[in-house]
Length: 449
Ligand code: SAH
Ligand code: SF4
Ligand code: F3S
Image 1: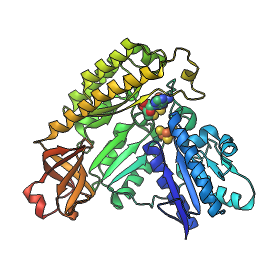
Image 2: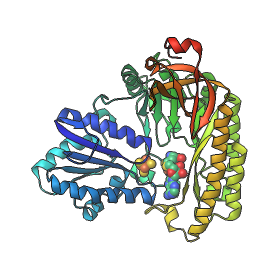
Image 3: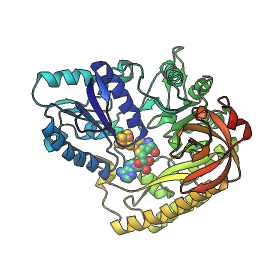
Image 4: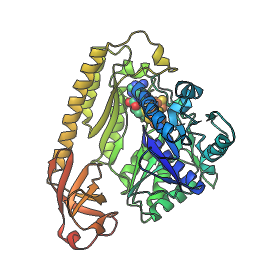
């Protein structure tokens, strides 16, 4: 057996791709290992979204240099979005790298490994090949866990002016619904109870079915909801522009679709939204939130924000704070704007000073944290269905998640792992809820609900 170490950076799509690379290399005799030291193959599945993400990759490559000196036949592969964006520059900067493979070409890894064995020097693949990558991948065999990712859509045609994704992942492309439904079935047969549908613009999903008809995301979710052993469905990440009425209605109609939606808005200022090319206004966003709340009154929202985008004034930032106060988010991610080479915004002249960015980020994060805390506190005293994922650190403890993705701890039988049971929530410590199972679930494991 050869040892394979994969380190994943960035978003859930990279996590999914890493699992698929492990599946792809298993027939070549590669078995996963937990550390780079002594590995025959190391894959860094990289992210390019902000400058810091890219820097991390180069510092990791620095560390790998020493390990490769100990084990000269170690193959070092850089995969993912930095591989796509920087290509040959990576080997120029870090000669320790043997293979560079973009996110749309990793099905060619076995062939690249063979080429690396034959020839001296580096092997690069950063095309967006015509052959669909997914058709070339084997059936998923790696461990799924109770919650499993499933990529249904890749790429982006939106071209927000700050973002590298359209360049690193290529144009929007949707997988065929039949293939996705089959994969969801395989994942659930191997123990997944929650399926998280992934895409850079997942709600722009338009797959062509065997019937020749185009499916939207609402129809795909409906079909996956019919798989009996799937208890929960989520999808991420959505763009406000693609949130159509059918998908909004699905939130009211499909019980397995969880009432938590990640809907990034980035800014609350129309001026900044226009400069970002987000193609919607703050009001459009608020209107969507209203429609979703009408369809599913208990729905909660999360979002991404960028502060300090070029030209962002105090008034623009205040508009972001006002939007946050109006929506009341359950959980959010927020970032300082990071100029990315090759994106239109990187050429902007009116930059926001670093201390101003920092002050805005701190103010926004304080408000978002307060809202997250409010959402967690509001759960205390309620009874919620919880999907149990794994044993906790303490004896007899289980860890699960509420419909709102809040982590929750209870005392209960391990037979509940992979099942949904109702929990009366009694308290909150750090960021985790705790509670007690209802009497009937203490003895027997409930059926998936
Ligand atoms: N497709 C998703 C998000 C992809 S990137 C969407 O459209 O929302 C994830 C998040 O990273 C973005 O939502 C944005 O908030 C942040 N991000 C992207 N580029 C960035 C940059 N140049 N600087 C800072 N944050 C950025
Ligand atoms: Fe990037 Fe915008 Fe596409 Fe999201 S929608 S991936 S932020 S370009
Ligand atoms: Fe990063 Fe690429 Fe995902 S840039 S966020 S790994 S799509």
